[in-house]
Image (tube, rainbow, N blue to C red):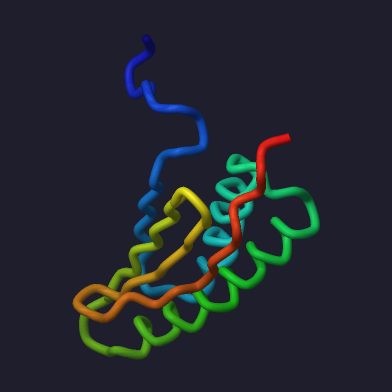
Length: 109
């Protein structure tokens, strides 16, 4: 097995992604969310709309982190597949968790 490989089933891993408080990086969150949704079986248009929703919510969190002044605060983006839903949350360092997206898991064909 290659280093860093996973023994779990594909598409079942929780992804944790940390970004510095810069609103210009919200598009990167959109790309990560799009990949996560497609990896978990969400089809084209639905995955794009979900990723756009994540980008909009993440931009708000990143803007708030950038405005916090003084030190740069980071945002933790958590992409978690649950048995019936796919959930994306964002959390400012030391702040509450914000749900950015929740989608019903597609049924296997």
